[in-house]
Amino acid sequence: MPDIDHLLPTVDKSQFTTEGYQKRCEKPWGYELYLIAGNGPYMSKIMHINEGCRQSMQVHDGKIETYTILRGRAGLISENNQGELVQIELMPGTGYTTQLGQKHRLISITDCDIFETSTPETGTTWRLEDDYARGNETEQVRSEPHRGWHT
Image (tube, rainbow, N blue to C red; front, side, top):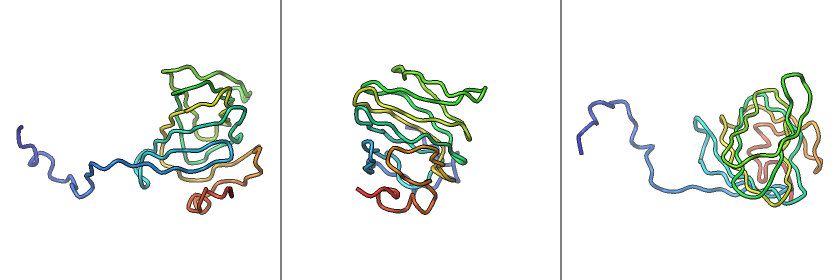
């Protein structure tokens, strides 16, 4: 194998790891499996939504998200460029992105697993409607066990 260390002199190898990571966060609609530790340049998680449940209708002021369905069936209610809410069913192998300020809500049709990759979880998640009476999710709430939701 060629020696390339001299080509990458600013690489901080103290950050290298071969350890896996997973953190489970219970939610009233199911759970999330966080796949990345810390607050890196991106975030990845698997969201399990129980059949008949839905996430909050929400808006992010500091986070862009992209989803794809891994297992089961789910829908996305999302604001289009005319300000109207439309509902679609997520199709396997297809990515669906929500932008800053775009209203959106994931809903389950069956038990389902959805992979999400996003920018870091920063700013506030503004909950416009929530079946579980949760408040907005701020940086402080994110640091609390279960992110402000009490099981």
